[in-house]
Image (cartoon, rainbow, N blue to C red; front, side):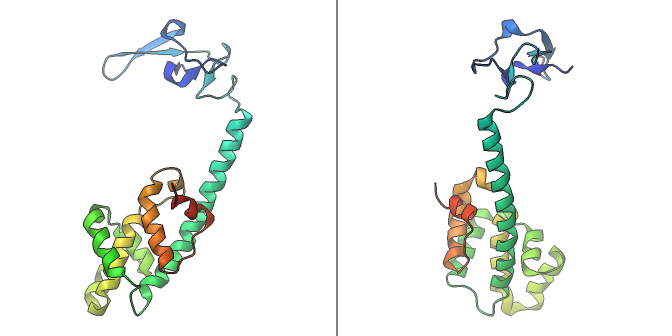
Length: 193
């Protein structure tokens, strides 16, 4: 049976397990002792708040169902939004204030450009075809820059992004809504704090 470190264990009442209760110890990479309990289930302890025996409490089950549902909702929303973005960057005329958005985004987030995400948004097969699009069609330079700006968000947005960094995506999603994109329920929650 594998020992579980003390920081992951609590008593039934939620109180932490102390070093005196440990029945195993090993050295960390830094040579520090790490205390643990071998048969924590038999001792009625909880791991990461779970019930003894490894089961989840009803509250934890409800939280887990919410996480799964929200992950699925954002995964679906990501697909819908990226399809909408593909149409946005293919329009003959850029969206209102797209140049301002692009300039501000690239000034702040240029290190996060995701050329693969930009290629997918524009319907190009890969980042190299995307790069050629800009050089072969100079009139689309603004569209290329917009796709790069959008990629700084889309390259990082995943199904779990609703759980953290909401503020990072709030202005972005709000801008898309101003351009005509209809935010899903989960995306709406990401625009509020």
